[in-house]
Amino acid sequence: MCGIIGYTGSENAEEILINGLHSLEYRGYDSAGVSVSTPDGIKTVKCEGRVSLLEEKLSLFGNLLGNCGIGHTRWATHGEPSERNAHPHNSESLTLVHNGIIENNGELKASLIELGYIFKSDTDTECLAHLLDSFYRKDNDPVSAIIKTVSCLKGSFAFGVIFKDHPDNIYALRKDNPLIVAEGEKGYFLASDVPALSAYAKKVCRVGENEIVCLSSDSCRFYDLQGKEFGGIFEDYDSNGFSASKDGYDYFMLKEMYEQPEAIRRAVGHRLNINGLPDFRVDNIPDSFFENIDSVSIVGCGSASHAGLVGKSIMEKIAKVPVSVNIASEYRYEPPVSYGNTLTVCISQSGETADTLAALRCSKANGSVTLGIVNVVGSTIASECDYVIYTNAGPEIAVATTKGYMTQVAVLAVIAAKISLNKNTVSETYVKEFCHELLYKIPNAVNSVLSRMDEMDLISERIKDCEYLFFIGRGSDNCAAPECSLKLKEISYIHSEAYAAGELKHGTLSLISDGVPVFALAADMKLFEKTASNIREVKSRGGYVVLACNEKIENTEAYADAVFMLPDVDPLLSPMVTVTFAQCVAYKTTLLRGYDVDHPRNLAKSVTVE
Ligand code: G6P
Image (cartoon, rainbow, N blue to C red):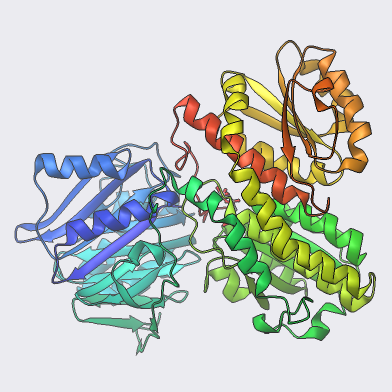
């Protein structure tokens, strides 16, 4: 939620800030702004809309010349998206950008108004700017002003600030929101995430909770909340060959979809030993860990929880452990009843999702052992879990996750295989074949679906103007359906729902009339006969059926208006292939409807508010 960028050094700040903001747009993109220390003082330019509009505005009204600045791209929480509410927010002595929520901003605002502050925006951030200003003006000491300010704040936040008296320094702090600093050849940088700085960073440091940093062109100082200075730990930055650019693709989503086969191989391959059996020692997880698990509680949001549904199905079938899948935002109110030794698995691509983090803390407080399945190395969830398995998917930029989801499912499948092996619930031969299929056959099947992208044209053309549609399936197809449905609705804005195929007749069938599209998912051949009955129910009410089914099923035209043949794979793993199909349909349909695939309205990739 919201992207923060900062730079101080010998280069032109504006250009670096704009580049950084473009990379951070996945965190929010309803308005943007920059403040730069110029020879005429700190100048701020902001606008409603995307970073490209800010760029235009700057070139139209005069670029900001200076070597130190901060920038922000916003996802609105307090106040509508508008220039007035865009960051940076200024107070008498400073300019400030912020990510997160100041929960007690109402009471703080009332006391600041009493002190004579006039508010120009509806944001909680302006309250933070004025509060900081009120303390700074007492003793002109930035660090002490930040310490006093933080002691008054409730909520989660990361912020960067430039004081007028210190125009070449950026001060920053974070609490429950990500913030990193980087050393480059020509100065120091501040950002919400590492990929935003991949073009500049030589060394990076993840700012710790409640740590204050002060960046200058040639140094980075760290202070704790007692004002005591300490040395921050920088690590050499290596992008691992991953690039945060589109590499010639029209959209990040498309690029990331095509990266899936390789990402799956990486996620799985790292965790198989020379005998092709699962082994998590590479993640520093001892073998014995998998023997003492009586039940598993999976926690995540959005697609991460959908990955959990597939994980549950595999684990329960082959490892015979009871698994619950919990929506993270509900976890605190409806925690799962623990049964024996419960392992809590927190799934998060970003590793920063506020609800998942809160659930993780809650489960730890309840005494559960926690395992993170996380993509972003060093993220908060990764750091707070007892154990972490990185999905190694590389940076995911498109808001709609593809390779993130896919690698989460892949890792869950290897965990299921490991628990099965250690608990002897299936034979070693079975585990070996299962892992072999996951490592080789599945990436190939995903590739084969992607290579038939053109086959989606007809389907997308047919559904592009519909008001609503459905995804139905049974068994593992029912586990795939929620993710298929979410992919389509989040980027194409067509209302879509997922149902167990047998459930449609218990109410929802009343919505089926002439031409309403229903995607019938049938990767699992064994269950097709029953799903076919549900398809007939839809057809006889005039529904338009798109059948995505196992290639071995014959005579498909008899059932459906359009058919897509899915490569035949183990039904337990088939959601990976079926979801790839749905990603392609979602992508193509969104293009036809003329929307921005990478930046769906109202959404952000890293959701750091509860
Ligand atoms: C956002 C993203 C989703 C993602 C969810 C959880 O809503 O748009 O694609 O599934 O957050 O994100 P996480 O980073 O925790 O996997």
